[in-house]
Each structure stands twice: as C-alpha cells, then as structure tokens.
Length: 321
Figure 1 (tube, rainbow, N blue to C red):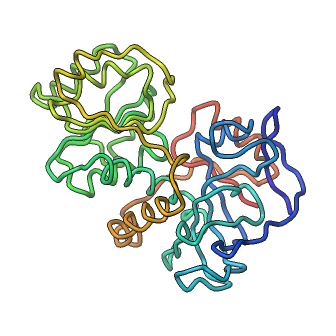
Figure 2 (tube, rainbow, N blue to C red; figure 1 turned 90 degrees about the horizontal axis):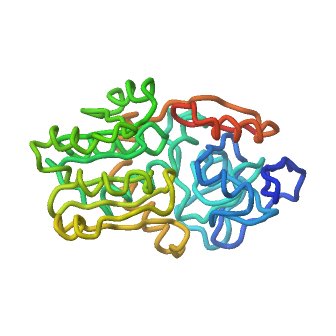
C-alpha cells in the first residue's frame, strides 16, 4: 500500500506492507486523513508521534476492514468510522478500538476526518483538565488553527459566558466570531493582556487554553484571573521562555500541562469515552464543525506539509488516498 512515512529528511511517500490488526485493534481502509501540527515533527521522526520509518498521521476516517478478537463496541467490516491513533497517512491504518467512533449517518469522510484529534484534544483541555464551568470566561491562544476553532465552539457550547480567541493574522482573526468567539485579540500587540482585562472588567479570564506558550507565557499570567487556570496544550511560540513566578503566585494560577504522548491506552480510551458522552449529540447535529482549507491526494503529502508550514491556511488540511 502507499503511505507517507517519516525519514531523517522529512516526509516521503513509499510502498509499504499493509498493517495487520492486533487483537485490540481495528483495521480501516482510509478514505481521508487530517493534518495536524504534530505531524510536522513526526515527519522527521521527532515529536513523540513516531520514528524514522513510521507512517505519519494521527486522525482519519474510513471503512472497517477487520476487527481484532478483543475489540469491543460491535464494529464490523463496512462500518464507517473516524479514528485517532498513528499511521493515518496511508491507504490502510490500524487503531485501538477505544479510539474508533462510528461516523454520524449523514457525514462524509472528509468532514469526519477533521474531527477526532480536534474534539478529543479540546474537550480534554477545556472540560477534563480545564474544569470549565458555565458562566466562566475563556481565552483560546492560537484560535485560528483547526483545534483552536474547535475549542471556541466547545467552550461556547458548554456554557462559557465570554469566549476570546487570538490570532496574529488579521484575516483569520476576522473570522473567529463565526466559530463562537465574542472577541478576537492580536497577540502581536504587546498590550493584548490589557485588552483581555478590559473585556473582563479588570479581572482576567477564568481559563486559558494555550497552544502557543513561549511568546505569550507572561502575557497569559497577566490575563488570567485570580484562581484561574492555564492549560498548556502546544508550544508553537516556543518551548522555553521567561516566567514571572511572583505573578503566577500572586494570582494563584493553576498551570496544567497536557499531552497524549505519555498517556496509557486506558487513559486514551477514557478520554474518547467522556468526549462522546458530552459531545455526541452536538457533533451529530452539525453544531461542531471545522472548515476544510485544502485537500491533497496522498501522493502529494509533501506538498500538503509545505502548505501547513506556510501557515496561511484556515481550518483543516486533508489527504485523500
């Protein structure tokens, strides 16, 4: 089968053997796969999502080919599913049964492929780790990314009183309100924390979901309310930065780090279960959706990564085998 694999020089499309499912896995014929920022590091065998020679891609949608003997959930050949795991940039991929979900009846494969990583990551960040309560205020750093747009929608759906999104790109910032933002902020402006404080009557937001980190670390502390929470999801703005420990202590901020790289299979299954418990109905109703920026054939996976690196997209980039 054709697959896009990691090499020490970056992504390369090759012919490799079709994977065989282990007893707890489901083999899926991939119909569409989503690109995620983590894939850029994985393409070089870095970043915790694989190694040199491994197939890249952490979410996809397709049809069940075979279910292992220990698979739960009643999956059978021909079922239309959406998956999270590893190896999605391929004609066939396997996933643990606990990270496979039935597609809503009226979904297309491209629509379904935009969702698994976005909904799991941001439900986990906002609800499980961020402990968002109805009536609270939320700031999403890096809100114009696919997962960022999903975070805006989930926050609004789960009852946030004020949802703020950030982007340094004016055109993308102008579209954040379409996805639930009450206010869009430009973090390239050094005064952005003051804008957040003004919008919250000087108190700061209750919760920040941070996909940027480094360049906004101290600004986040200034913009967070006393007893607020910051959930560190990504580090697009740098993995290291100055940190104002006195401000952190004075505002009594809870700082939470999250990643999927160090979670057990059981933890990942539970993450998916609680997400579907809360979001299955709105997902099926089309209330949580992501725009598709551009679709590439699998053979053009290198060009798809170049498009993502250019950082001019809005929404999800997809590969079609």
